[in-house]
Image 1 (cartoon, rainbow, N blue to C red):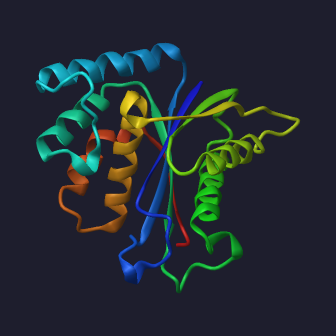
Image 2: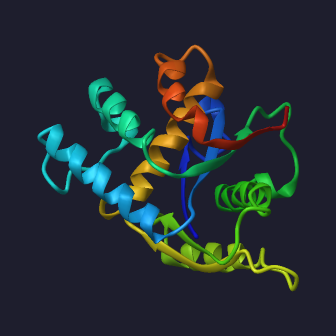
Length: 209
């Protein structure tokens, strides 16, 4: 089992200073290596169709609407599911020490979405989009492995990887961005984008309600 993790929005709490209200973390889950390889084949083929170079990165916030819809159309054909946790950072709703700092907030949100996926995950190979200092990356890997218990090992390995070299992380980026956009409401084309991947959704939890 293979899990790819990415986020949309910023983990900072200063909404008035420009930080987004919603912070979304997504798990894109493939059952086996065959499905992971199929993702590579599909997205590499899409680059050729769009006449993009082999190292072109599908990144939702940087891509045109034409590329976005082409990507999501290709993604709809892939065999994966996803879980998402959406944190509403409205200061009137949010409290607790785990939400005071960006790093701890990110870890807490990751924990929630992994807990929601716990029943499906078995010996999962988890890949995060590599960002932040290596000390944080190491701490995050250790934190996620701590979700294992004696009764069931849900996490086999954790690694960090550049999204530029991973089609699967680029897929996670898109799923996170679309999910976040839907939560914001009134965002242009949000429903159009979401319809491509709605059938892949297992769980999207928004907290606090």
